[in-house]
Image 1 (cartoon, rainbow, N blue to C red):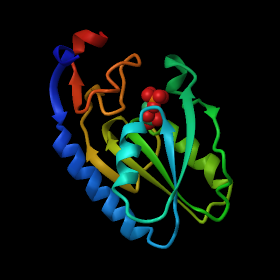
Image 2 (image 1 turned 60 degrees about the vertical axis):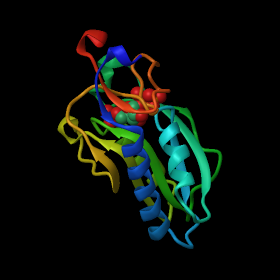
Image 3 (image 1 turned 180 degrees about the vertical axis):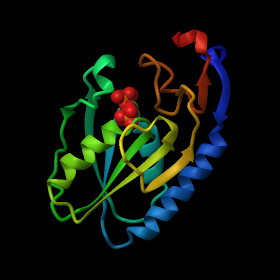
Image 4 (image 1 turned 90 degrees about the vertical axis):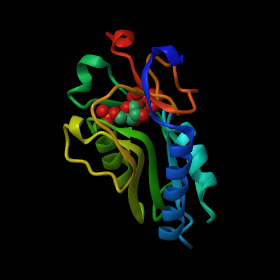
Length: 178
Ligand code: PRP
């Protein structure tokens, strides 16, 4: 895997440190609120697993899967639901946990959908934020790292369903995806 990377962007230690900081911030902000943390499959899984273990307050798990209709329609912002939540979010303090906000279409779709279910509050926590690619007005509430316009993989993020198991986040060599 490593020979297909141009470089490592975030080491295991950098990720661990930042995720612990985010967990401490969320624990403080959501003390006594029993928040519901929604993991957006599949990219967020490793971040989610580490983030919840960095939080020392009561919280609940739920999972959602969404996907764009395809490469050509992605720019139109069409997103489809693959798996909905198991529980109701009415009157709950909800945190959407994402690995990356890129164009913002996925989060725009999700926030609109979930807001209609009348949660007590709804915030977005993303490990990576790529503002240079944004196509809609969307600002995440909690951000691990800002990244430039690189093709990043690892720690849950994939290229062609591969590299998700990489413990670091790396920049993919251009020759791999071009
Ligand atoms: C990725 C990522 C976000 C979305 C962000 O998911 O996990 O959900 O893209 O992109 P956007 O801001 O341009 O909408 P992807 O559809 O690749 O699925 P995955 O999580 O299963 O890898």
